Amino acid sequence: MIATSPIEQREQLYEPKKGHKNK
Image (tube, rainbow, N blue to C red; front, top):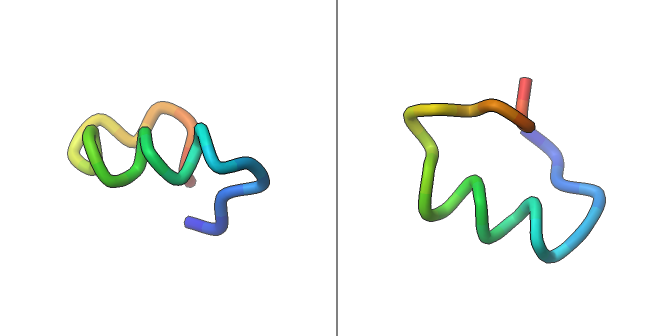
């Protein structure tokens, strides 16, 4: 759930259901 980069943080905000990067 912790994003290592701002892009990952945006992906978590925009696509929280997919969660392809965040575990």
